[in-house]
Length: 344
Image (cartoon, rainbow, N blue to C red; front, side, top):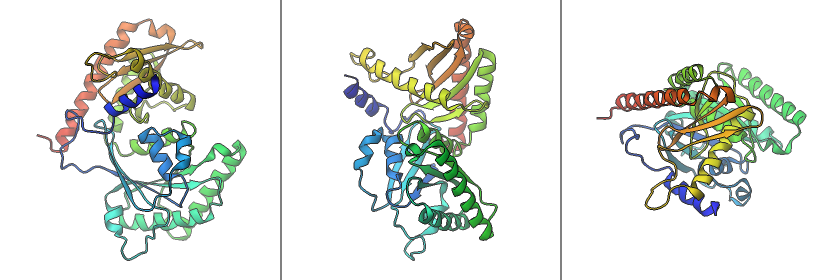
């Protein structure tokens, strides 16, 4: 029962226009480039994170043979384009327009298959990074060491260390030590790919410091241990407070979104209601370790998910009051962003 209902909700919450929150039509969106060798897992990452494909279904995806452009238009903070490049693309081909490809790029994600011999991938990575940096030195470079689900913990550490050392040595040798690359261990079979893509997207959000500050204020005044501002469709978090992110906390908060949507699809909405996720959406889950998970709708696409101690949650009215102040502040950030983009 939950399956078809969930598909229906994803249609309602899909990457389409929400007129109240969208920037003006002429506003340019940041571009994220997905690159890597053939069968590295680039298309699988995109399908799992942004199109809700299950990891097992990605086994049947065909290799990308041309550049695939995907427009992600969600909340005011989650708006960008993803360009998925075929693994065999040659950056030194005269027909390849480096200025057009890299000039408007916000982030370049290079995917390395950690279960394969990665020497060819490292050579391609070096070629890609040096070419892109010369065109646009403001690009953020992200390296996904992918398919690590099949590796032992020791092997993960050794592989990461080896890749990092080789990449930095090559850049030093090329006279480009100033290029900064971020490395992430990822797999489509767990939450690591969502956590890594969250970091990529956050780097494209100019309002990130403001969002982080608002979450810090909310936490301090409500007794909240950890808070995330989630994009409901993709389950990537567009912001969190300044305390370190523990993977277990992120997984709990991320899974709560699935629980709320599934239960809402079964028991919520109905006669004429357009969506089961709306301004009244909220949920509370009490854990057996004395912590409480609390979710509240911020707008059509964003949800605040918090982790707090049960004794602090007894001041439920205070938490709700502070949340309404927080939601109003988020809306003000939306309005300022629209004005900065030249909206009427």
